[in-house]
Length: 490
Ligand code: BG6
Image 1 (tube, rainbow, N blue to C red):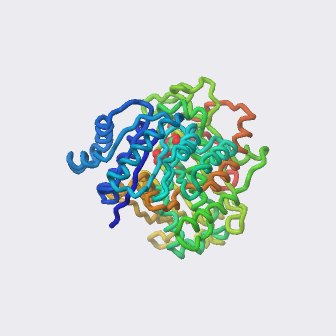
Image 2 (cartoon, rainbow, N blue to C red):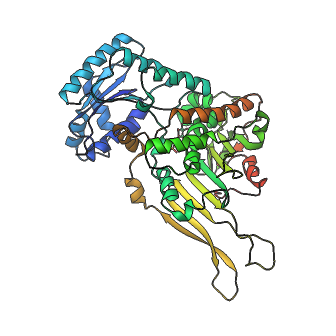
Image 3 (cartoon, protein in one colour):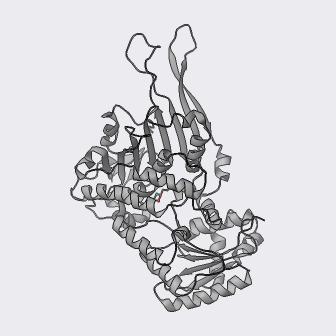
């Protein structure tokens, strides 16, 4: 049977993430039979809630997904609420009692999954108290899922990791990067390793450059308080972008299993060139959105947003060039850009292949042919395109670019599993392929810290791009000075 057996204890059970992502994902797994009779959920947070109230909240959060009211109520009946102060060891004995009661009631075989969906300040103390409060089981599994951010630089991440590792082993820790749960991010490996046509060309002899764009049209919304201490570099580059880079750059693993894949990702990240502080301006561009009016709609600038300092130096945009110093990638720039309040919401990867040695099709000029480009559309569109040069119909020998395109239908996209659904199921299966290993976190922070420090040493004239654009002009110059252009220009 595909049924998974576990007790979920969610710290931050009243929070936004739990309501928006976790409860709906658990319900999807329930609908598909991965969760059935033998599961229970304890939601914890400071406030006092009754089980009844909690179940109503859970029912609300799956509204729209539910097969029927009865089915939703049946699902919600597995949920229990426990008011809890994470720093008070006494509270863990109450939690332990409830844990044991539910373990017996639902025959959970001692399988425990602890989900930390709250402020990272408490990750260390919670893991310690789970151990000291004897909540870890000997009979089943103990697994810890942690949300981002994992530290705010290398040393804070190291400290956090040491705190957690005092109670949980590396293979019990599941560090979430929700990009790894995305359908099309998981497809990177399929494109590479299921197609000889690509894998044989996946190196510096045939690839000219790679471009990764994570563009968001929204601003910081209500998250100004968090975001103003983070910025795009920590919020997006340290995790999501470097994770995508590692999947694009890694050597083929011997098997598609967590141990083998992560070993290759770690090696790729360790080969990323660490910049000298004085080189940072040459490789990185930062930006912050200013107010503007787009199609009659007015947008505030970042500094006018809620909980943001009026003279904030926080970047809401970052573009850069990553170099990977190994045999496969030497000399191939991996360009990336990400930002808030850009022209469009969309994530895509463009892989530009090198040109043929000579353009035989154009006698009159030295114009090179347009490059072959493989595009992986991550979201909201999911799919691929491949641009080829072909002969234009007619008497001459002119060429034109043909775009082969396959985009998942709206229906397929709507029915594809949610990132959190996949990741929770992976964790239940003990499969950590799509979670970040500590060594990946460590390498990523070392790369990011150098940039952060260089930037912190210099004040910059912000804002420098209008809402609704694709970032500051310097982002375009980053490529043009190397003879390239952003392939995607919304
Ligand atoms: C999060 C960032 O990790 O990713 C947010 O904290 C960002 O600032 C979000 O908006 C983007 O995720 P997605 O899935 O909407 O591309």
